[in-house]
Every structure is written in structure tokens, then in C-alpha cells.
Length: 522
Ligand code: ME8
Image 1 (cartoon, helix red, strand yellow):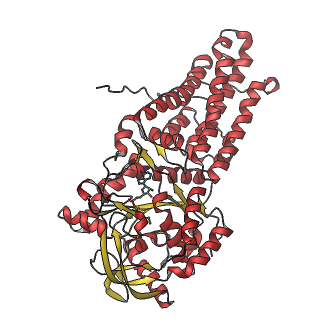
Image 2: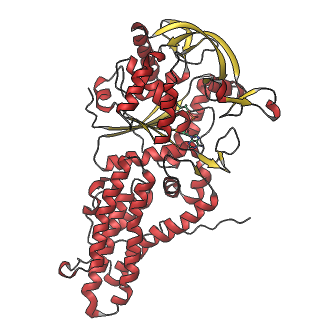
Image 3: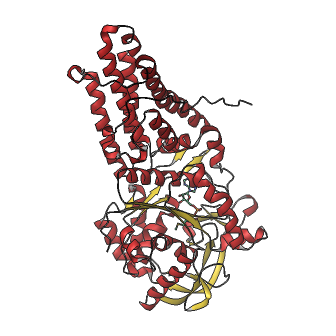
């Protein structure tokens, strides 16, 4: 059995019907920052992402593009979804595709086990199906269409007409798990977070769960039901299992025991699948439920949930080509309170880039390196410990305080708060340099000791910042670590003791970390 000590973190597996936009990239970056933090803390970390390739939505898109669904998925994965990970510097340990053999075979194994245990039966279902959501909808999830869809019922999420389906399918006895799930939410209040999502889920389950249709017979792009090959497995049932099949379920018990259970980072749109259906499936199979399901907020563009189908989609490269991947990562993690919705705007991105990254952190880094070079020939002097002032001690105290506060925020998945706490050190160091005026001290040979202490304090604080910001700004901090002639790589530095970093006695020249961006006003 798992001892729960590993940190196994996942993103949703994304549909390959379309290319990625910044909403997908947002989830990737959040999970990546958490994974990098834990890895750097020395925790046994495993970060999984991947793609969801079965179901009607993919089948229809592929057909419309004159390709088989597998050809289409291969193309999108190779040309768009894998490259996304490079574009925004994602450090995933694994990438699962639901067309992988390790997945397909073990979904069948899981399903057979549920069947043998009596959790699956044949039944009939009639209802409205949204292909965009790949889900049967209640009337409360629908609204009257407008414009080209006038007179039809449309899904509130996709604004596209739903289809009335009547099918004879296999059903999962999900209703059996109404009470066990309520007990779970009650005994583990952190199981679903944030609070707003938790409340919604609890209310939903309190109304009582119905059984879930888990197979389809009208098309064949999916995993075959093992005891009845005329059916394919419902795409969500198939997709949710990726978290288990990627972790060794069914073929590598040791790995599964080590990794499972996972922390799932998802958008709140799909929190219900993860916090209701998925734990019910796991309970039925006698497996542990996830450690946590975190449903983050939506990126809004022009006040609406950003989406390709509503033509508000922005490709991540549109941002990274100009601002770089570090700025992308920083901006979304800092500007939006993780868990809440947040609006994206180019103006806000440019303003934060300039004020916080270029003038705040970047400028601090270049000033410190330049001062050591100019006033001390590039060698970092030791501080005169017997003559430390309150200002010097305050910086040292902030290094420790920021580290602890940030780590504590990461434990709560409050990424924005972790960055804000680290940024207190950026601001304090900038203030310290302004007040200590090393450029004045450098002119007076009798102040050489004081200059040494100030330079040492500034370099030390900057090194601590480099260690702490490495999960968010991997590129900039790697350059800075080289300039500080730090030992090993910055990712090797134990992040929970960031202030204990060690570096060489010299500094090397540093290029501008966040160069000025000429905004094309045309
Ligand atoms: O739902 N703001 O895949 P999907 C924030 N395949 N996040 C957003 C977003 C926005 N505007 N738009 C998308 C699926 N996302 C299933 C998942 S998991 C077993 C199967 C992110 O391609 C967010 O993480 O539609 C959301 O939950 C996910 O993309 C939906 O991706």
C-alpha cells in the first residue's frame, strides 16, 4: 500500500480536437510550479500530463478533416500538444495518451474487475448529450439557443445544440456511492478545494447520484468493452483512468503503490468528474481515492471564459514569442489568485512585465551583479559579522520568513500567495540597496567594511531569491545562478532551506533577464 509520501501531481488530459490555448497552458504551469517546488524540496515527485483522444468529439473533428481519429490525434500531439510543453517550460515526468497500449489494456482490466464485482449492468438511457462536454446534460445545464441555433436547446458551456440520444448501454452503479462520497467530503474537508468548488460538489451529491452510462454503441472510436466488443467505453470513464494507468495500475504494482494517490489539478468545469465519478470508480475497485482534487478558476478574456469555440482563444506562443516563457509563467501565477477566475489582458501583462519582472527582479539582479563587479572586482566579500546593522539582519530574517511562508502557501496550493511572499524579499532588497547607497560607500575607503557587508548581504539575498523563484522562472534563475557562480544547478538547492544556498566567491556578467519590450503600437 501507498504510504502517501510521494507527491504525484496531474493535469487534466486535454482533448486533441483542437490546438492548445492559454487556458490549457495555465493549468500546465500551475501544476508545473507545484511539481518543481516539491522536486526541489527533495520530495519524491512525479508529474503527469497527457492527451484525451477517444470519443465522439475527436472522431467528428478527424472526420471533418478527412483523417482517421488516430492519424488526427498523432498529428495534434506531435505538432501542438507536445510542443506546448517546451513553449512554457513544463517539467513533466510522463505524458500519457489514451491511445497508449498501457492505458487501453488496463482500462479494460479495471472495467472487467468492476463488472465481475457486480457494479455494472445493462440499461437504457434517453437524454440530451453535449458532444463538446462529452456528457449527458440535465435540463438545468441547458438554455435556449440564439442566432443560428434559435429554437434549439444549447449547452450553457459550449453554446452549441445538444443531441437527444436514446441508447442501450452498460451502467455503473454510481448511486451506491452517494453516501460514501458524502462521508468522504465530510471527513476530509480538503479533498475537494477550493471551498467554492467543494460546496458545489457537496450540494450536487446531496441531491443523490444516478447511475452512470459508461458505454456507447453508436460509434467505435474508443476502448472496447472487454466482455462485449460491440460497445466502446464512455470517454470520461476511459479518460479518468489515465491517472492510474500512467502510474502503473495493472502492470507495475510497485510503481502504483509508490505514486498513488495523486493530487489532481483541473479547471472547475471538470471538477465534478474528478471529485464525484472518479472517486466512486476507485471505491468500487477497492482503490484509494485521490489525495486532493483542486478545481482552479477560469481565465476570462473580455469577461467571458476563454475558449476556442467562442473565438476568444489565445495561443500561448502569442505571449511567449514576445515576453518569453518565464514571463508567461510568472504572469498567470501571480496576477490570478489560484482558485478564482481571472481576466487576461495584454495591458496588465505588459504592465506587470515592466514593473515586476524588468524593474523589480531583473533590475535588482543586474544592479547587484554590476556593483560587485564595479566596486569589488567581481569577488563577493564576506560580511563583517561583528558589525551587522538592523537593516542587514532584517534582510536575513526576510530570507527565512519568505521561504517558510512560501512553502506553507505551496502546501495549500496557493501559488499566487507563495510568489507574493517571495516578492517581499525582492522589494526589501531593492529598498535596502537604495538606502545603503553602496555607490556612496564605494567612494570612501574608510567605509570598505560597510561596503563589503552591504554587497555580501545583497548577493546573499539575491541567491536566496534565485533558489525560491526557480520553480516559477526556470530560465532566468538558471542564468542568475551561473552569474552567482552557485554550486551545482539551482534546481539542486533544497528550497525549504533556500537561504542556506552556497555560491562561489565571484560573480560573472549577467545579461538582462527581462529586456525592454518595444510594443508595436501599429
Ligand atoms: O475537459 N481557463 O479536456 P479539455 C482556465 N479531456 N482553464 C482552462 C480554460 C480557461 N478558460 N479552458 C480550458 C477535458 N482550461 C477532458 C479532461 S481529464 C481526465 C479529461 C483548462 O481539453 C482547464 O484545466 O476540454 C480545464 O479543466 C481543461 O483545460 C479542459 O480541457
